[in-house]
Image (cartoon, rainbow, N blue to C red; front, side, top):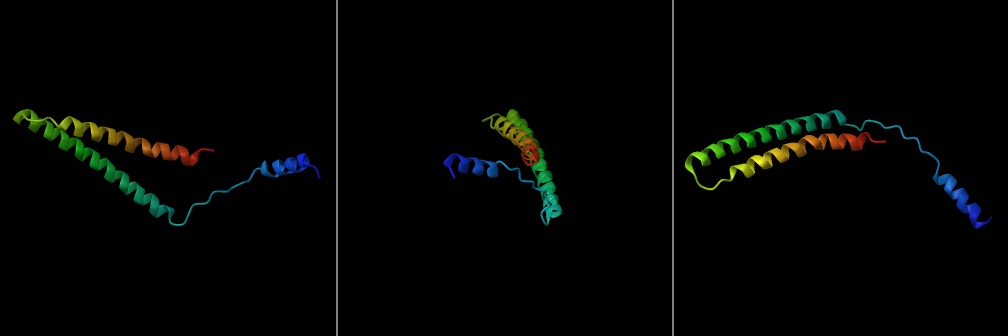
Length: 97
């Protein structure tokens, strides 16, 4: 048996397609329910941060002093964007073929 023949046989074995049938893991509905609750909590935290930043912005505008509220509002908006796209990114990664 030559080296070229052995390499050819090895490549033929490695090139074979493996069929995989995905199955739902045990406890998947409970995990999906937990993720749904967590997404609601993230959304409520983002809304609370925007309301807090808006109230602090009004307080700082009325009383003067250091202006920190735009940073809070910007951080809440960026966090909301990241939280929104995290689900889409994970869905694309999981369902990609």
